[in-house]
Structures are given as C-alpha cells and as structure tokens.
Length: 262
Image (cartoon, rainbow, N blue to C red; front, side):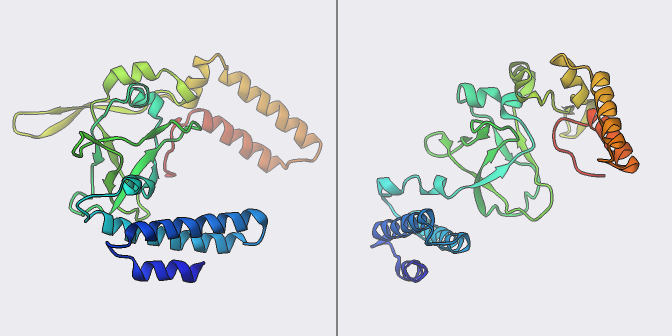
C-alpha cells in the first residue's frame, strides 16, 4: 500500500487528478479494513494515513489551479483542514455562531508579519461536537469553510473573535459550566492609539459552583473527611493528604478556562 501511494504521489497531475484521488481513497479504505480485521497493526495504519494525507495535499495543490474543479473534489480543502483547539466555549462566548450560523470576524492577532501556511477550523474545550467554529467571513460566496492560519511553533497562538459582545455572553448562560471569560474594555482615540479602560475578571470555579447550588466550603469539608479516613487506613501519606487538600482548595479559586502555569 505504501508503494502504491508513493506511485500516486510521483505520477499525479492535472490530467489524472480525479483518478489519483480515487486510488488513494481506495488504498486508505483497504488499510482501514485490514486494521479492523487484525491484519494491520496501528503503526502501519498510521504510516498509510500519513502517506494518504501527503497525497491529498499534492492533489489539492493541483486542484487549486484548475479552472473547473470536479464536484467530488470541491470539499477537499475542508477535509484537509487542521483542527486548532481553542481555550474557549463557543456556547458561552459565541452561541449565535452555532444557533443561527452568525459569522463573526475571526483572525490571528499576532505573527501578522508571517505568511499563514495552514488552513484550519476551531474546536473548543467543551465535550460537545457542535462546539466549533468552522465558517468564516470571506470567499466568493461571502463565507468560507477554513481560515488561513500559522503553523504551531510550541508557543501560545492568539486568535481574535470580534463583535461578540455582551449579547453573546448573556445568551451563553452557563453552558458546560465554564462561566464568564475575562474581558477588557478598550478605547481607541482620534489619533489611533488605544487604552485599556477596564479589566473584568471572569468567573472562578467556586463562583460557577455557587451558581448551580454547590457550597464550596461543604466540598472542602468533604475532601477533608475523606482524606482523613484514607490517612487512618494507610491509603495515603500525611504529606500527600495535605497536598491534596491544598490543591483542591486552590482549584476552587482558579479560572474555569485553561491557564498557563506560572
């Protein structure tokens, strides 16, 4: 299968691009079947998948230059898009994107001196498959299914979602118990300079628990009693017991979204 994929990669061109796409799909499906039957191990399947994606990238590069794109290849760009996981809840901060297909301006807000080389969509922190942003402003029809992005380099990557405002926050309520995000009020003066007028801190864990009728003090007391029982039974050391209780109490006052360790 790897040899067959390598042959497709070496011979694909504008004249046989549809045939090449059919071939790589067939090879990938064959690999999946062999894996399901136990004849192909996970490492080998991963190698086939990697070569399959490489061939699809080559095919997409050719398709982009065609004057008339075959219907079955129109969604190839979307199928090959990366998924960037964002530190947000779509239902909390942009519920209209999910509910009524509202398009909000979305774009990187740094590394703007670098050319974006990736195409991607966003998935949020929630456990719901609908928690994603996969439609963007632009394109000939007014919207597009992928966004031009920069390759990840191991550092934080900042994306701005604009024009959401307080209305989206009110609609979001407490879906998934993430609560309100941090917010800043920014003012732009006549000279084009900006200033941060006000910083509004988002909810911490204890506040969100209080909204849904949980008492943080009662939870701390329950953890204390549980660890003392475990300590008497020899299931936990005194040091670990103190560390567990300290970390639990600290967690109650942490931000509900992901934070970087200081």
